[in-house]
Length: 218
Image 1: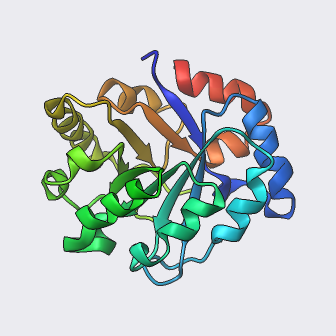
Image 2: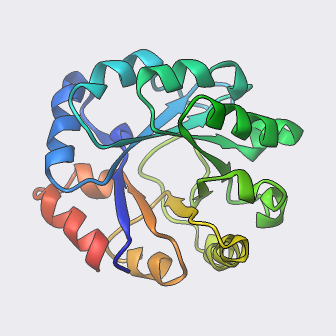
């Protein structure tokens, strides 16, 4: 797939030199920088907030892909937009019946928006908001921690999500996040995912540029 984009997750970076890590990955072929925001409530981990995103913005001109794993995300989207996020994705599980309004609120701030679903959430749950999205993110692990193994049962959902996107006739990215390796990336791309989030696979590689290239072309 020629339109495949690679989004290394800085969750796997060395936070003691996060600016340099962001610059490094940007120069080594990343198309997006994936920013995993966790609040310790929606998921059992805490990462970072808008200030870190604002501080590393100066280290990269790549698309900043902010994945909000937080409760009541609508309360914070303005701060993330102001911090330099280019895309803000929010969970169906966190928003419930406020998902459509939250997506529209993100768009009103001049940034792109996306819906996220966990591995145990059916694609049909976001059918009513897909046309409001610039991106649909499927989690292939349960969110909260990096380094988890890919959940194989998510594979049919990639195909289903691609069909849903195609039915809109719109240019909507299909992002996959969790446990992506050089061994399974070709499978998710064949099924329709075109934005590939990779954490440890990229950041723990001796040659990050080569791994990014292989993820894109594998």
